[in-house]
Image: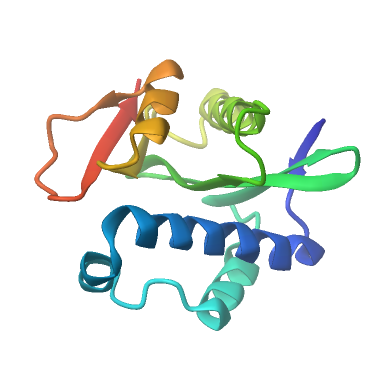
Length: 161
């Protein structure tokens, strides 16, 4: 397995991964709540443009995991003066450690930026649907905890220090 920075030819794969996240959100929340909460959240054309613009800039890094030269997962990490944030993570198959490999690589990226003094903290945040218990347990196993700042009805803020 190999984790690498995304390239322009990975955009369609990454969009497919984001579409899978979108489908999961719809399933977990139901269409009515999803529509209210996300308000046309996933727009493929908008996301494609945005990903190309953000691809591997200083404060946004897209990583792709390959297994036997086939793309099997993607993660987007945002690092800036306000902190570090896992924006998205998606894998093609659960139970293969793909998510863990991507998260550990994201932690390495953040550690390296911190050591180079390009960011001020190694603290990492993310958001997860409260109804996505599998993801919550996965993040807890990686050292995240649910923040006390959780006023949202559907989403937890999780932090790893």
